[in-house]
Image (cartoon, rainbow, N blue to C red; front, side):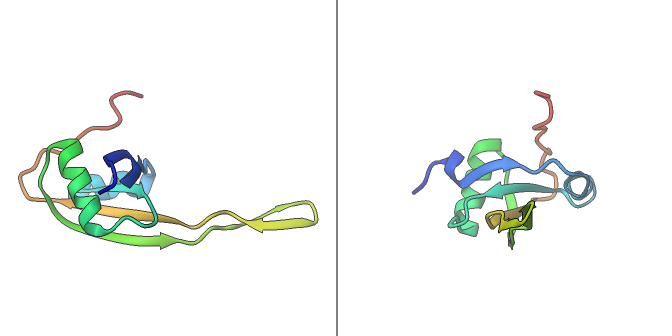
Length: 97
């Protein structure tokens, strides 16, 4: 089994992610592309000491980037929406900023 920090790369701190966190009791993470929903669930539960209700994942396709006449694509990456069970305390990962 992979370690916690190879499954969860980083929290996504965006306006949409913060809105989902406040209204739907859901956390958003960038995760490893080969990580399964079960691995993401176990990693979040052990890392933040909370109970997870559901995990949704999405593959985000890389955008096209140009440098003058040269073009290429950014790499694809995987995003996970982790919904916590009702009554769970929402972890704060912005305290260190």
